[in-house]
Image (cartoon, each protein chain N blue to C red):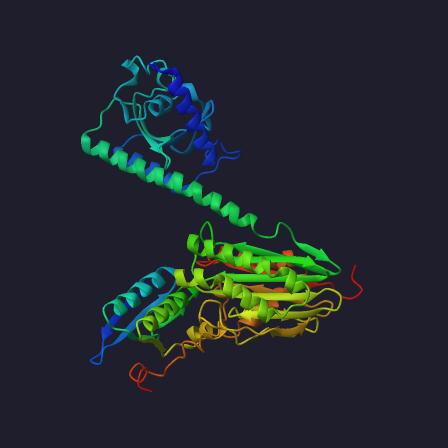
Length: 403
Length: 111
C-alpha cells in the first residue's frame, strides 16, 4: 500500500516530532478530559454509533485522549484503523471492514466485532497529522454528504482543542516555572507564595529573593486575564527583577518603582493595560519593612497581640498616568508577626468587601505557617470557583524563643 | 448577566449604564461600547454605576482604557453614583482620585 518508503519515513519523523512538541505523547497517567469528551459524546449522539474516539499515534502505540463506548488505554499502532487513516492523510470511510481486505484482519474487526469506521485526520499548525477523530460501529453503514460534513466539523473542533490547548498548557508550565521554585526560609523568616490563574495562564505574578540579608518581595496584577495579561506580566517580573540589586542595597522603593514604570510604559500604553504592584524589602536582622504600593491596596499584617493592620498608600497603579510617582513607606514586623500580600482575585472571594482585612487577618491568625494559610487560600479559590487569578504571598516571622 | 443602556444626551454626552456584574466578560463589552461612542464622535462620556453590583479589575481596565481613549480624542470619561462595594474597588487601587465619582449623571460634566 505504501510505495514511497523514504518519503513516508520523513513524514513519520516529522509527525512524531509534532506529537512530542505538542506534548501529546502517551501520558504517565491518563485522565478524562471534558473538553475532548464532550466532542466524542456529541459524535456518538449525532451519528448514533456506539463508539467514537480521538486517537493519537505515539511511537508504536495508539492512545485515546477521549473515547466513548470502549475501554482501551493503549493499542499497538499497527492494529488500528487510525494508523492507516493518518498515513493516507484524508478522510477514511470503511462501510464494512469485515469484507475490506485492508482492514478485515485487524483484531478489532476479526475479534472485536467492529464493522464500520470513519476517521478524519487532525493537523497541527504546520499541517502535520497529529491525530484522528474516529467513529466506529458494530453494524455496516455509510455516511451521506451532510453527515460527512458534520463529522469533519467535529474533527475540526477537536483539532482546535487538541492543538491550541496543548500550546496553552505549555505556556502555563512556562509561566509556573517563572515563579520562585521553593519557599524562602532564613533567619527566622518564612516566605511562601501561591498563584492560581483562572485560565491556563494569567496576569498575576509574584517573586521573592533574599540577598544581603534583605528579602525583596513583589506581587503584581496585570489588569485582565489570560494570554495578553500573561505576556505583560512576564515583562513586569523582568522589570522588577532588574531593580532587585538596587532594592537590597537600600535604594528608595519609590524610585525603583518609577524605573519599573518607565520600562513598562510603552507596552502598557499600546495594550491599554495597567498593573497594580506591591513591593517590600524586609531587613531580616531587625524586621524593618520598607514597602511601596502601586494601587494594589491588599496587604494585611497580623500582629502577635491579635491586632490586624492594613498597609496603605495613596499611589496609583502603573500605566494610569503618563507621569506618576510612588512613595516608599515603612512598617515593622516583630517576632511572631505575620503578613499576607494578595491579589484582588482573593479579595473578590471575601464575604465582607467593606471590612475585608478582618476576614484576612483571622485567616492568617488561624494558620501557624505560610503553607497552611496558602492552602486555605487555594481551598477558597476552588470552592468559590474564582473567575480571576488568585495570588498570595505569606510572610511569617518566627516568634521569639521558638525553634 | 449584564445589560448596557447607552444613550446620548442633547449636548452630546454619552451615558452608559451597566446593569449587573461587570466582570471579565462584561468588561470586554463595556470597552467596545466606550470605544464605539468615541469613534462616533461622542468624546464626553459618563458611566453611571448606580446599577452595577460588582466590578473587578478587568472592568477597571475597561474604564481606564475608555478614559484614555476619550482624553486622546479631546474629551473625558467620568463615573457617577457607584455603590459602596464598587467604590471600595476604586478606593483600593486609588483610582477614585483619577476617576473621581460624581453624585449624579446630569452634573458629571457641569458640576
